[in-house]
Length: 315
Figure (cartoon, one colour):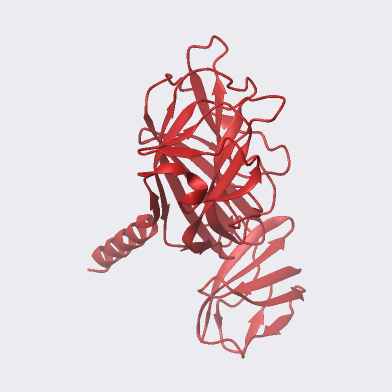
């Protein structure tokens, strides 16, 4: 019976981690410019605006325009958790006209929404094949650092509609890992984590980018339809608990005093992902946590250059 219970518990955890909620659906089933239909321009020209033809948004050669649509509810990136969401589109790049040889991104999430956007993670890129017979898609997790996108090796055909999903995962703790994964027609293809810019505190919008300029109208002829944003339940980032041989805390069952086995700067994170205590500790010292409510917490810190997270239970 105990073994059966354990298997059921694992099944529940896996199901909960993979359950999804549809946060936004935009079908472009209207005729006219996007900024008259829930979208906001955050940069670019005011002419040659992005429009829907009644079934899909058209992006054509011309001056730039960047627009975003706010999510009905911003998705919070919680400290101490693994947070995940994705967007999917139906994409049709019509031909090789004006595709930048070096590639460029044209869809992303936004850390804010409205007339000013900050942080644009989960970027979707295109790049034409050198012989002009097809193109490749790529992804970049976020800006900063080397910020080099990773491209799929799957060569795609022009004038052929495909299903694209871009998944963004943030593992937030003492250090933060940001990973983006590209799926094409339901098959996971490539992932990227080369950008090292700060993770957003939340995801508040989805953005479309038409990157042409007055001197270089390099914007692909493409259509985008069926934009959907899905979120997933947060999962406690405990996969690295007591990673390696390093130990951070001595007593995992705590009454009033939390005892430490190593020196470091620590955070105590509650089950809602909130940092409830921070401290600089030494080996053999203790921290008074009597003010904390009963329940489970994650203690995170760096021990000898190694990220360590340990679960404690406050009685």
